[in-house]
Image (tube, rainbow, N blue to C red; front, side, top):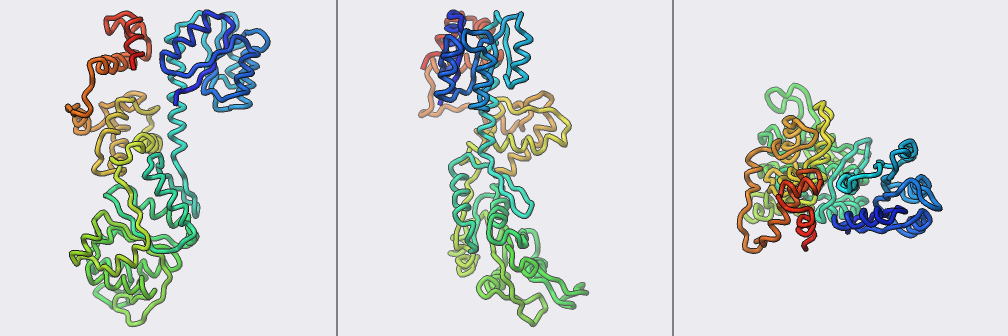
Length: 443
């Protein structure tokens, strides 16, 4: 949907020039020839931006500013003023105007300021896609702009009052542990313990001791009795990450806990009763493992009352931009740098990358880019070279471009390079401003 802009200006030539220029850039432009007409339009619909002369018949630009900010605080206002009315423009800034521009002004400069406002609005819309979950004073943020992640959040919302065991699947680094925390801290057990363990990081004996604890003297070095995670997590949740790595012996012991709610400590003879909700996760194909006899089918179905599949990042490219912005905000403070965001070229590179390491890999890339970046924006030069090299275009029969499309694309890149100044872009391209206008307007 095109951004909507209202231009209020009583000088007809100026009004028409602004309208034509903004419409060339693809914006939906409405005009008002005096303050009264502008007030009527403000009362009837929402505009992303109001561009208004400060002095007009019936209603001044200051009054329009106050009116639109009262109805639509998100609308940004650019004040047009004569050189002798700078003090009034400063007053407007104090009342919430985004910027002012003095007559006579360059239309390219005006469009540049408009573009800057709308880029910031785009970023705010992306931030709305960040959903935060609060539980036990713990805050979790998950990116939910893509349809796949929104569906997961909708599912979690619908089952938050349930208490069954769940299985989380997906590639390494997609965020299974984060989803597990959200399930717990928004569920019925949110005020009870949440513990987790990675089953792939310990030997069988050590893992058994960590899960079930041990009695004094159970083995060499067991000088005292120790509670295991299953016991400590009683009445709460235990998250078993990489559960497919459990040995057959530990799978059998875990099955007894899940089925009967009781277990034995290592070296113990007395059964201990517990009430634990189990969340399990793996990056492997569990159904294949069960068919091959490497994972107990009965344990799988006891844990898999519901399966949540978290798609890889390459299948939810809409999340790359918001995720990148989130990781920039997360890691920027400790760098001591002032980086405002990402260039379009940098985001394009990240969006088109396949991310075999998924979200975890993206976070590492952003953290590295912050360290290397020397400007106020993350640029392609701060992204690993192996990722940039993957951006070389290949000829895809279904995506071949016409010569006109290539010319338009190149012209747009040049225009962006010179900060939207069409006169400069025309000089760089060696064509007239009219020819550039025709190229950019071609559909």
